[in-house]
Length: 373
Image 1: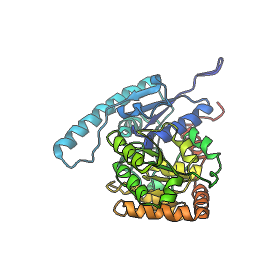
Image 2: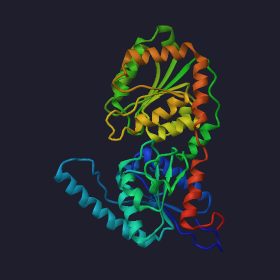
Image 3: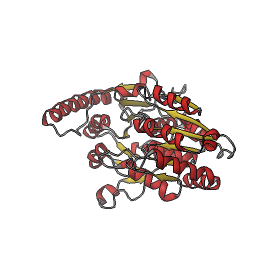
Image 4: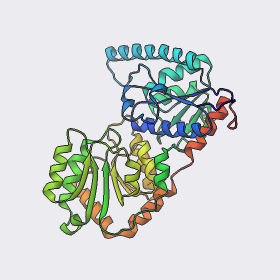
C-alpha cells in the first residue's frame, strides 16, 4: 500500500515455479522488498496454490508453462506452443503492471515472463538457489540483466556470465529467520527426529525411515520423538508402522510451520533441495541428506555436498539409504551427542540470514530504484 502523499512505486514482478523450492526464496525477497516500500507481484503456475500463501490473491498471476525435459518430438512441440502462449500472456501482464524489474527464481514458469522482460527491455534478474545452475536459468542467463547466485564461482568457465553475477545466497523466508534465533535444543530426552522429503514429499522416506527405527536398539527407540512428513498415499502405512513399534510419532502430509519444527529438532533426515539446505544452514541443524537420485543436473547431490563439506550433514546416496544404514547412522549420532552439537554449529556457519536483503539490494540497483524512495 502506498502511503498518502507518496508517489506510486512501480512493482517488482517475481517469477517462480510452483514448488516450495522456487516459491520460498521468492516469498523471502517479497518480504524484503515490501519493507522497502516496493510492491511485489508473483507470476507462477497452478501448483502455487499450496505454497504461495504469502502472496495475496490479487498479486498472483498464472501464466501457461511447460517443461522441455522430454525427448519426445510431439511433447516438445506441444510444450513449445504452451510456452509461446505463456510468453504472450506475460507480455500483456508487463504492459499492464509496468514493473520496475522482473526476477526469476527458476523453473519453466519463469521462462515466459523473463523472455517477455528481455523483449520489452525491462530490467531482469535470475536467482539460482542450487550449487548447479538449473536448465531454465541456464537458458535465461545470457538474456537477463543480472544473475544472483547462492554459491561462489558458479560461472568460472563462462566469463560473460560471471561478469553479471552477484553472490547473494539463497533467501530464506521470514519464518526461517525467526526460527534461526532459537538455540540448538538441549540434548535431553526425547531425542527429536524430523523427517521430510521436500515440499512434494518423498516415498523413499516412508519406505526407509520407519523400518530403520525398527532396527535401532529398543532403549534408543524409546527415547525418540519423530515428526515425519509423508505423501497422502503413504501416510496410513507410516502411521501404522510407528504405532506397531510403539514410537512417539507425529505424521502429516505437510507442515506449514516446518521452520519452527526444524529449529525444535535434534536431527533431520531429508532430501537436499536448495531451500531445504538453505534453511538447515540458516537455522543450524544437523542432517542426514538423501539427494534426489534422478535429477538431470544432480543439483541435490551438489547441494548436500556443501553442508557435508562444512561438517553439518551426512550425505547418503539413495542406493546407500537402507534401513540398516540409517539405523546405524542414527545410533552412532545418538551415542555421541557432542557430534550433533558440533554438526549444528557447522551447518550454521554456512547459513546466510541476510540473503533476502542482499538480493533486494541487487534488484533495486538493477531496477535503478532508490531504496529510500
